[in-house]
Length: 362
Image (tube, rainbow, N blue to C red; front, side, top):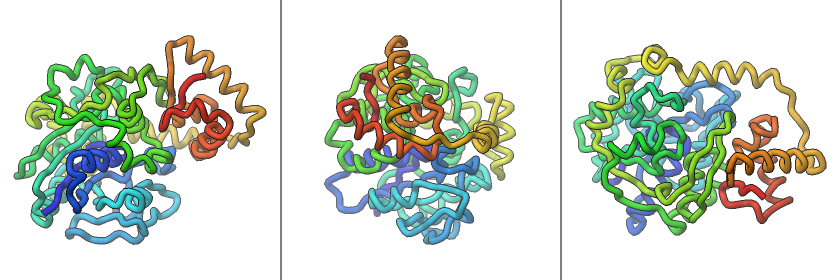
């Protein structure tokens, strides 16, 4: 028997799932199976939307409908994915959610895993709380993946615990709107809990999980994120993990209820446009087209550091104390592929400002 953790939105939720598993079950020899999307957004993957099994080489079957992504797997160009590197560094079993058959397909994948693994526990983990979005929040940006996994978990004949870590850290649903549905705190992450995933945080682009880890390490203030420069408070609530009633979440999440009978990802997108007013994959399609027209800027400290100084001065005037390297990349008008190069340049030039994995304003 093992443990199964479903990373509700993929990406950083999978890294947080590894941290949760180590924090709650670190005394056990066997690591959890983490079921997650290969959906790393345009910073890592220039192809819009989530990747499926046909986008990889080297996958290993776990069940007829579910594949494992081992460290040796590789995305097929031009696609990109962080999953093989996560598998190499974190040594969990990373199983791939394939959303191409909609909620019906993901439900079937979950049912096969439950039958095959006979897990002692099943957790659905979301960082930030957009799994609890109603669908009409003006700050909502990426409801599709979370609603899809929530809808699937709601139809599986097995006990599933819904956990929200770092409520409000994704900037999609205001923390005040979440208080009414958040249940008891089951764990509060500490700096010690971050240690098992610290190497992944050095390169993984997730902003929400990065802030979750930073708050667990004691960082407090206001962090500016995303291309739009959204401000996220870093408070004592940041490292908390709350249990939420799964039925209450389904009652609240209109999109999750609407897509329960969907059999294709296109159907899920159509309903997202109707209920939320948009599909996040449409946003990726439009942004990918725009990025193809941008010119790659050469990085050097002589030109970059004055731009950084100006950005930091303006950010401090807005009350910002920290930011992410993802946001810095966008704010300095750089290409997403230059994020790692920018990060190394800044940490080398001004190491005192690195509040891992965030950047502290001077």
